[in-house]
Image (cartoon, rainbow, N blue to C red; front, side, top):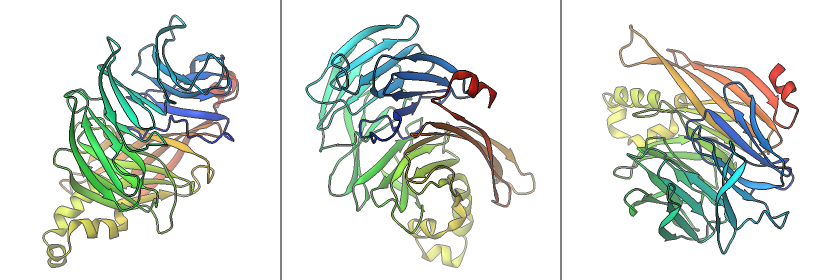
Amino acid sequence: MANQSSSSSSSSSYPILCASFNQDASHFVIGTREGFKVFDSNTGRLCYERAIGAFIVVEMLFTSSLLAIVGAGEQPSLSPRRLCLFNITTGTALRELNFLTSILAVRMNKERLIVILQDKTYVYDINKVKILDAIDTVPNLKGLCGFSPSLDGCFLALPASITKGSVLLYNVMELQSHCEIDAHRAPLAAIVLCSNGMHIATASEQGTIIRVHLVSDATKSYSFRRGRYPSTIFSLSFAPSMQIPDILVATSSSGSLHVFSLGFALNQRSRKSSTILGSIIPDSITDVLDPAHRHVLHSAVTAGVKSNAVIRKVDKVADASTPGIASCKATISIITYNGYFQEYSFRLNYQNEPLWTLEHEFNLLSPVSDNASS
């Protein structure tokens, strides 16, 4: 599940104002100054488009015909304070919700609709469009949030401080606060929950360390170093998994694509615990120092351009000679706000050696025939 970049904080210099993948990453949507578009992630096919003005939030509910859309305010009819639930099959608005301040982000699953404002977050029953709770929050200017679409572990993650990297976890099915995690010293820049709600990954404005916590008891599971120098983290995404995700991916202002191997770190940790050094140094320290868990593709996208990446699928192949170790093949899709879609194949062999392949790349703003031929 990806960290969600569909936010009104997008730079006005980008042709794409917002971009997000649906809950299973089978489709993605973009908002531009002209309207919004829905694409098939597997083929790059343009499924739907509507040219009716600028949009700063566009979110898709799984593979249904329901979109949540918010205008950029460039036209009087497209207020950034109005949320429209839009049916792409009929091309009509199902419901509209108006708020006192601008909508910064929207999240959905089959039971809940989440609306993020600067100082308040609203939880709705999506089927009845009935408000269930209103959460007072610290000023959340970027509309940062993480959301797990699973109904069994359906959590919402929000910044809990403007001076440090604390995150509030809220159970949207039980309508109550779950816990608060102090993840970083600096304020948060990115949050993502895995699809089953078991793990949360965070990055601060410093952008050098990615931390992963277990949601159930708020314990830190992993700390990964992204780099030595500060960088703005644009997106975080866990691999789809029923248990512990195999990998976590991050994009940043450096233009590099980072993959962190959670499964490899777990295997290394179990072996390390049997050594003398491993019994002395805490896991939280050794994890952040061990470069074997991190794999980097430099210049994957244009440096400085906002991007949103997801891990669409992961395949594993067991190694009979080394029990507990498996090779990994992942499909990683990236949307860049300067108008491109890229799909990389990432392979990690038994020796933890990475291989990157650019499988597809096309311009999201070009005619459909151009995309189909690429």
